[in-house]
Length: 122
Length: 234
Image 1 (cartoon, chains in turn blue, yellow):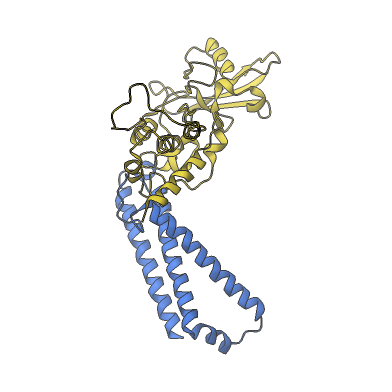
Image 2 (tube, rainbow over the protein chains, first blue to last red; image 1 turned 90 degrees about the horizontal axis):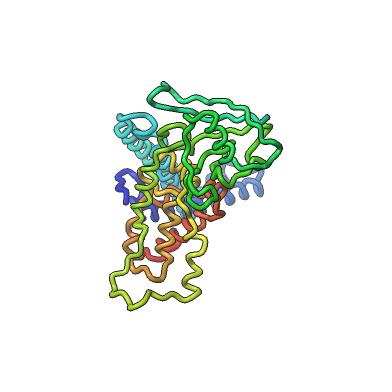
């Protein structure tokens, strides 16, 4: 059992499940948006703003942003714990990794709040 | 003549590792890579490698042969030689002690973590703990592992985190005991595996399956462990 403090759910199983579920949500959103644009190739601003002003669409967009946030957190955490280790870059690795991990988490949270601001600002 | 290039490193003499080239006469025979090493060692007794049974049972002579991990004793030249060249390096990812000999401490430490022995505290029956043929068949494809380390040292997740990720060999054995009907410590074993490293560092790239000299499938066993973790979770 390895203890972690900066991973998304602290449990490998939970991170694994979140990674899969968030991938499905993002795929569904992508298919929907691409499909919408293909079917409405001459979409106007009013039409586009109208699509995103309804509560169900906002919820779908927010759910997707939450999925992007969780997916990125888990994925980036894996990348950072693979490559920024004492084994690869020496004894200062732990401090450097925590710096990058906390920076990554802060960035994800900022993007998430920004997305909420955009979605509800339409 | 076959060109043989071998990784050489003697920490007492060499500042850094280097590749040494040899010319080898196969006499037109499709011999095993181990035979080549044995004959080269007669010429140069300082060449160091591990070997024992020379028939793919002991798992001592795992090396990287022309870019792919395998057992030198059961890899024929016809499979290993590319463009009249044979390149032999130690298994990647673990510290080199000398030439083709690696320090396998981290590999064994991971194996030890999964408690590779039967745990059953109920009183032992007079003769033996019985299994049905169906229960026994669940161990097929698992018990055959010879711990040669070809799989774990072919795994990038193990290269980056050999101290945290158990690796394909250890996980195959973890499942061997999880799947055993006579073992009663299933819950405890699973609880020790549910962190982001031990099992979940496996991203399913299947290098382990590609190189296993015994034809085993660690990725499949890891999938079974994941399913058991999901089933035991709330």
